[in-house]
Amino acid sequence: MEPPLPPAPPQGAITVARALELPALRRGLPEVMTGADRLHRPVRWVHAGEAPNIAALLKGGELLLTTGLGVGDRPAEQRAFVRGLAERGIAALVVELGARFTTLPAAVVDTARTCGLPLVQLHREVPFVAVTEEIHTELVNEHYALLRRAEEVHRRCTEVLLGGGGVPEVLRLFAGFTGNPVFLEASDGRLLYAAGPEPAPPGAADPLQVWDGLRAAELPGRVVTDVPGTGPGPGAVRARLSVLPVNAPLAPVHRIAADRAAGLLAVVLLQARQEEELAARGRGDFLTDLAEDRLDAADAAAQARVLGFRPGPGPLLPVVMRPAGDLVPAPDSWTALAGAVHRELAGVGAPVLLGVRLPEGRVPLLVGLREDEERAAVADRVAAALRAGAERASCRPPVVVVGAPATWRTAGAGLRHAAEAAGAVAAAGQGLPDRPWHDVRRLDVDVLLWRLRSHGDLAAFVERALGPLLAHDATSRPPLLPTLETYLAHAGRKAETARELHLNRQTLYDRLGRIGKLLGTDLEDPEAVLSLGLALRARRHVG
Image (cartoon, rainbow, N blue to C red):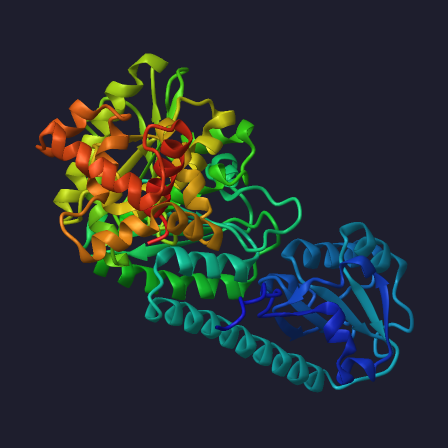
């Protein structure tokens, strides 16, 4: 795997300082008279001339070479000459001494200093054509390096897509290259995805905070590129790629790279029709950051509003959905699943923030409640919508876990707990009853055992507690494990156990006696019952 692209330095031009270091100008023994603190200015072009009105011929960014013949004789003319160049925005004025001046007039130096214009005098004669040729060669080389750098970004983005990545991976790579947050918004202005450089620069704001604070501002230096769609009119622009220079200034290479990235994004969006899935992944990143304490709870509500979630003053309900068992939909299937679930949730009657997390294969949600008492009713509606969406997307019935009502301060922990519980339920497979939704508060033991699933002690405990019974069922009929599971599920009530198993009481007593003998334990002993109950639940998680 290739390392991340490092942030690109400004390219496409050389600075005044760099021009003065080149051999042609160095032979003239340059002396900086004013503007020494502005030698970082980029040089766009080199121009040599002696006309008094030469400022009118310039466009800005030039390094002007002159012997001073057009500067004028009177101080007023000299001041007007320098002011005209400064107003035109040239990079620097370089005057060769000898032909016109032995020393620069005070009016020229003072005006250049007042205007903040770098002024350089050359103490020896140099051929201006050699200076022009040398700097222009340097500019061409810089421009070639710029194009080569943009091509490298395009290549890496293409490799990401060919390797199975999607729009989020391209945006994250591009954010790392620019060193700034990157945003993809729909043509109607709705935010689809936000990505920041990784690792984030010290003190850098979360991309969603940046978007909320600066999207409407006229931020100088920002890069905005259209992602083309299909057809004329409104369909001509499908989305917009924006880069905001909040951590570092943007260079020409960033605009060129953005144009090329926009072309790739257009192909992906056109091919996959994945705007909703992309937006869901952006919301999933936000909810995961909230669950993993990477967000300040005080900022979470504001960032959620940026993503379109505006609950009332009531509690929040954390919910996590994930596919049953170990089967996780292929990346392409998430597009259909995200769209189908999003449409079904529109009829829930409560504000919902739905996300998608491909790495973990889950769908986290936050639901706005009016009061704690409506938790069960809203959970029923949300679970029904999630199941209907999964069915519409041709996915198996999912596992849905509902957390306890929370505030913004506790919502992250609630999502984290629900996600762990959903993982435990999905891993348990057929070991748990199939319910429309599972209450996280009834799954604490399963979550604890699921966390211990990789410890050899857990498997050893199951073997000690149930080994003889499992060995019996592997070779003999009828199996006795279902009888033990039903007996413990009914808290030792034999009549209810017999009724569910369709056994007469004597047959049940006989089976319970055989189980007790095989395990060497008394099924009336509360400690034995607790141990066997834990072993049965642990067995779901150790295979």
